[in-house]
Amino acid sequence: MLMRLLNKLLLFTLLLIFYIMFSGSLSELTVISGVVISATLALVFDGIIIKRELRLKDLHKILYLLEYLCVYLYYEARAHAKMVRLILGRSSYIKSCVIRLNVNLSSEYGRAFLASSITNTPGTLTLHLDEGRGIMYVHWLAMTSLDPEVARREIMGKLHDLTLKIFG
Image (cartoon, rainbow, N blue to C red; front, side, top):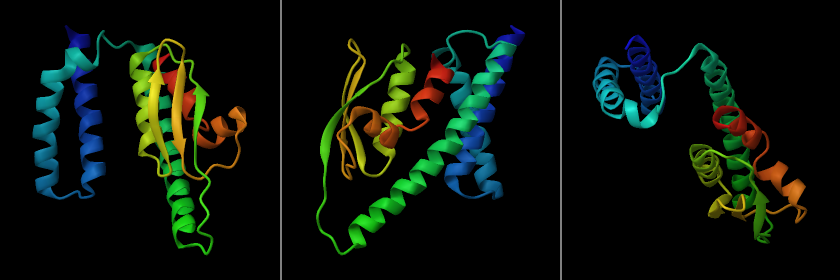
């Protein structure tokens, strides 16, 4: 019972942090609406989002999630800068391709999390995820290499490894 309450509290805290971050404001109205929305979502979706009671050893996964957020924001900024250079640059030549990447994530959440991160990064779009074979097809707007390992490093970077640590 106490652990379920801690799960709800953790979910509430994470939702509130993301709500305030994405609203970009720390006004009274933002905090109050964030508390109400986060509490409602935590109460309603706790059993769906968190399937089991969290344990102390799950704390390292939360730390990996924070590292993931920092790495993702860095990749996001880097991709935006690359797209700006591509759009405003003198060369109108764009080398795009659809590339196949191997993804060895056993968790459905992990695969969806990684695919969403790739899609939300400018210049890349996850087209298809073949869960049975562990393959992801990605449209890559600013291709630098057709070598799968180079493409994997360029598109996913550390995100795949961090997703593996978070979701397994």
